[in-house]
Length: 173
Ligand SMILES: [Zn+2]
Image (cartoon, rainbow, N blue to C red; front, side):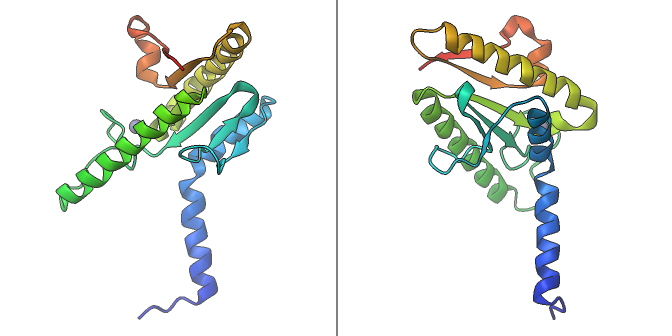
C-alpha cells in the first residue's frame, strides 16, 4: 500500500525532478554569470530547446546520455533485461533528435548539444569553456554572413581533442 500523502509524494517527485535537471541548471548559471540572456524551453521552436539565445540565434540542448543515446558513452548502457524495448525506445529518441536538429537548422538556428557526461566535475570546465568559444564564433559568423550559416556543434570533449576531424560541423541553412 502506498503510504505517502499527496504532499509527501509531491515533494518526493519534485526532488527527483530537480535532481534530473542539475546539468541544465549548471549551464544556465554559467551562462547567466557570463552575461548571456536566454529563454527556457521555447514552446514554439521544434523540440522545445532547453535554452534559446536569441541574440546568437542559437539553441542549446542538454541531453541525458542514456535517454538520448550518447554513442560511445559509458552512461549509455542498454539494460540487460528488456533490451529490445530499451533499444527501440532510445533509437526513437535519437531519430527525433535528428529531425529536430534538421528542422532548426533549416530555420537558421545554430544547434548545440551538451551531453550530461560532459558536465561531470572532471569535464565541466573544459565543456563550458568550449561552449563560450562556440558562442563567440557564432556571433562573429552571424555578423559576418550575408546568408545564414549554422553551426551544429556537439561540445564534445572528443571533438575538441580531435581537431583534425573538424572541430565544428558547419551546415548551410
Ligand atoms: Zn555521455
